[in-house]
Length: 177
Image 1 (tube, rainbow, N blue to C red):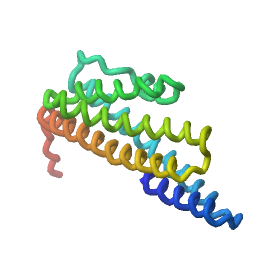
Image 2: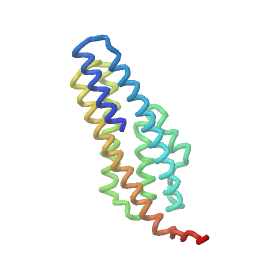
Image 3: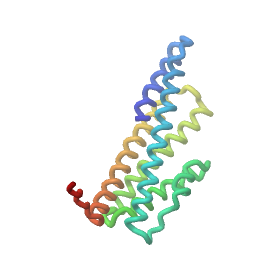
Image 4: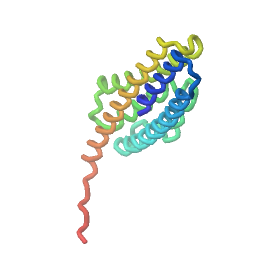
């Protein structure tokens, strides 16, 4: 969702650089992007918190981080470039015995590399060459890759938890009135 909005934002910024009209279209698109990105962040953190709770329930002895650490580490500068990856891996490992160490860890690592790569390119571009089309293309490619890979990580961990929770918690039949 936010990756699509970011593509529209990038196109508006590109158009603004190519055709200096002074119109506020790129500002409006950027504002929509910020709202959608904020929504995506909130939804991801809600999912992550629920996944942490499920992982803790499925594997009580696992070293799953606390709720505060699960959310808080995303907001600590520099720490947020390293620690959240480990949190997602811990949640994934604790989610199911079906966690495939090589495959699933590689998926999380690919998502994390795209996410951090996007952040680094964005930071470097804003300092070295603001408005550079080459940097914009790289930023967008990394953002789209991170969004797709995040979706795959969410799907994988959710599927593992659904299968494990379904196997351990039998559904109770509804009472007849």
